[in-house]
Figure (cartoon, rainbow, N blue to C red):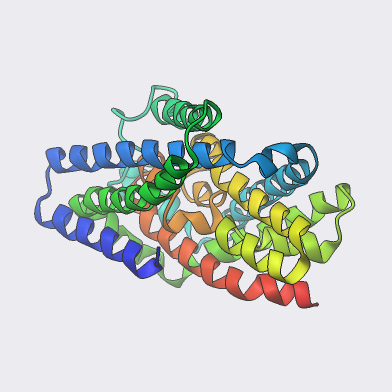
Length: 317
């Protein structure tokens, strides 16, 4: 699905939310997001469980991919957090609600008293398990393929729901004016942290620096990373690139609430990498707040463009 299609869905939702602002509108948006997430995660689980090659090689290829995934996630979180700590450019996003009229995380109805969104975490876990289970109890291959197709529409619904909730909160968009060009520091920090983290942990498993860097430069865009790395460096590294970036997308769903709670909303953009423009964007909106949606969208767009250039460039070095 093209980036343009996804952005149109987000824009339509935003326009509707803007012209129909109310608590009811935001609730409808939240319900759409919740349902879309469930469908998308069930599809991911079904595709994982239905791929015999992936399941058979999880002890080798999968292990390397997981190590690189953790390196990119941890590296990006640390780099973004340090960037926030040493510069004041993105401070307006981290400002308290008392000063700017925004809440730092989702509303109290969405989060438990300790700041952790257990409802979303439960949805993520249950949906993945259901999808994985369906593919392992003899779900026909054509149905698994159909789930993959349905997930495209679920993604459109997700972004539409995000647009509705953001558009109905008119203060959220105006708040971005306080950041200016400093918002571009976020994807730069994510890119640097992802590649450094991937390379460092890649060295632990004796992976060549260029290979680890190329895998990390996928920034969670597993479909692109897998195909390009496969074409340029062969099946094994291509499989690792695909899995490492797929794992990053899945891991993000689990760690993002914790990152938001302990490191703040800006840092919550880091784990998702390029996926913050689509798949993980709704979770950022729900857990961290509407004011982080536009920075997250910009982050995903910049990293997606960067991935198309960095992966082939690194592999040709």
